[in-house]
Length: 41
Image (tube, rainbow, N blue to C red; front, top):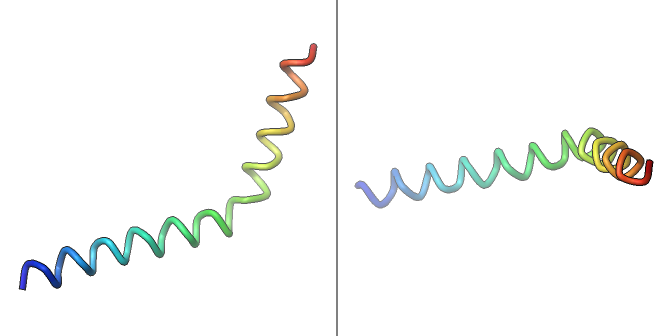
């Protein structure tokens, strides 16, 4: 039974990471561009 719970937790974390990447990709790209622009100054 413990194995099933651990598997469910891992699946939940994996789903959250994939959803987060999809949802926040634009913000991450924007932050990278801003950081690069600041380094060049």
